[in-house]
Image (cartoon, rainbow, N blue to C red; front, side, top):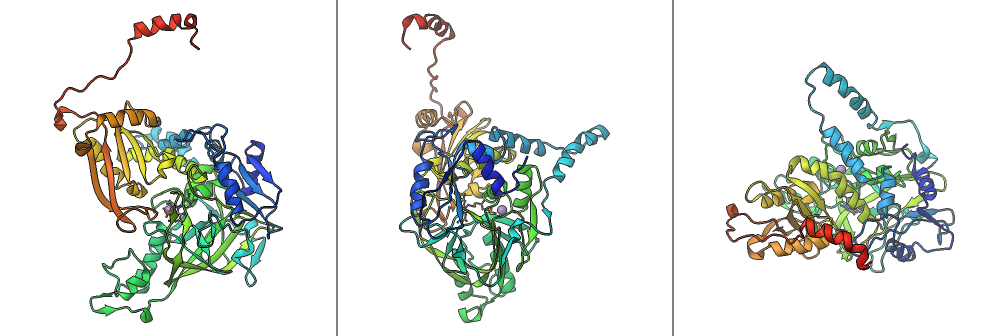
Length: 530
Ligand SMILES: Cc1cc2nc3c(=O)[nH]c(=O)nc-3n(C[C@H](O)[C@H](O)[C@H](O)COP(=O)(O)O)c2cc1C
Ligand SMILES: [Mn+2]
């Protein structure tokens, strides 16, 4: 029973006792952050433990916003393990993982019977593709002339933030090569009424669409083999093969962008999922909600957005314009540094009447995004196993802020396999950012940090078992030698084998024998120790 829209989802949160409506006046500048931060750290119903307990206070619907009399603001909608399940309409995230496994298990049919058996699956797949409809609630109000990004209660999150940031935007772009759409969650710093920063980091799909537009605008003149990593201004100011594209000789042009805010939870979640570029997030959302996402065409750009979005920003980024973005109190628990990013120019805003603005804050974990990340961890495990079949389980502890620490258990069958697994992870989509990977044997429960600490640290000879490598790192890494580029570490904490050069005896783990245990079980009550 997919949620129709954000309001339907809010009603579901409310009836599950997971929503708190707040009628006291609050300021979107700083105050909402302080409230939400405290709530994020409250004990939660049915939350998974993090290193600091089992947090996850309720979702919050602020109904009395200072300066925004007709607005409401939803925050912390995904902020507990229970709500994440509710958002995806499952009792456990493993259900989603199992559904994915079923689809991946589909093999070529061997005969008539196999084909018949496949029919229900194929029929089911038909339900996932997005449907374009002629209109929808997001067109209730169309603002072509008089509009401002500050018509909405955009948060200033932390005291040293560079400004106010749209923190939960689904940013839609189109691949100029394939025509495929991408939806990514990239924060937007509001510069003024009509412009905002477009913080797609260099390794993300939106940034790749932008680079492809840039390549096309320059028609390959000066861009072949150029360093795309820094800024388009850099690129254009560089020379290549004698052709100089100076700043006064810019390729120009623009790229269309649409931004949906206040989408139903499957779409919002799909926007953060590290999916391969070939798979449109609208399809992923359809798979998650088992019902197509309905899309409408934008008014001023050739893009589609979810029909039930609360707010849609239409516009473009210029290919030759970058502006300083940040600082921004980020999910690492530190401010991410200022850097240059493209600028979004708004051409039109469409919205529902009295739209509900949805937002999140990031900061010191645990926070809302941690639970979204945990869901990604569970759901992606079957897909990771496709390319790393020896993988048994993974854990990205919330305090590891997703790119800093991944603990994996493997079924080891040959020497050096732990290092092979590290390299596989470092070449797997956004897992490439993982700064530290700990590989343990399958007998270690990676969800139990205590057990991992005990066994991993007992089992290593650091000089021998730590593997360093160099490569791309997360843009938010403030310690790497260069932005976006640095070192990573893998720890082979598996039991070492003679075939790996370890010839000393390996001790046995201490375990009591069953007979003695049974004996004590019998006497336990009598001992009166509990
Ligand atoms: C709350 C939140 C905010 C995020 N902000 C950004 C951001 O500003 N820039 C960015 O590149 N990624 C950001 N991410 C991560 C991306 O959404 C994520 O990497 C996603 O997979 C990108 O989609 P893509 O693969 O289609 O580019 C954020 C994630 C969350 C949960
Ligand atoms: Mn994508």
